[in-house]
Image (cartoon, rainbow, N blue to C red; front, side, top):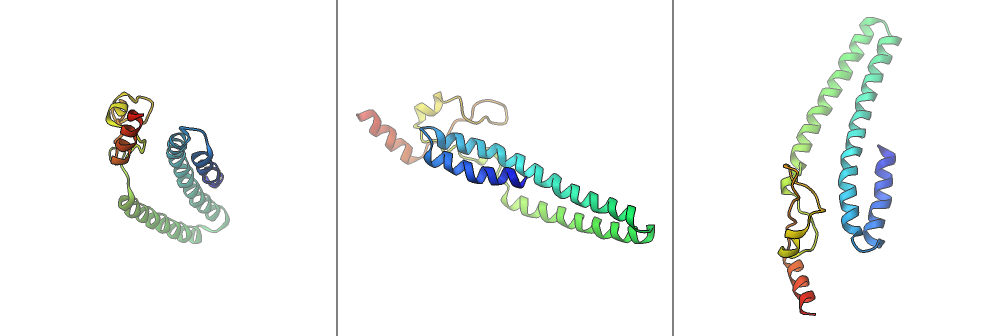
Length: 142
């Protein structure tokens, strides 16, 4: 997980800032996918750590001491889980509340089909902001 996060932190902004046209969208879409993968790897790593500590205690100590260590580890695991749920619920960003970020006017946005998909699998229409409309109008006037 640490390697994946480091690679994303180094390569994602570089692609977004110095890549060819369309690189910003490619970088954001790629980082969105990698974020979920890194988060999964991190959670599995924490779980594996607690499981290995529990197994080590069971193998190394006599059963009364191993039971005490297991109770302590389980209480830590439970506390981490509840803290995770509390923090995640504060910062959760659902797909239907996200913005695409592409600067398109409404006509272009209706024709755009290579962007992110909504929950039903249909292409999600990017929400154009006022700056995108002004830029699109200026391009049409040329």
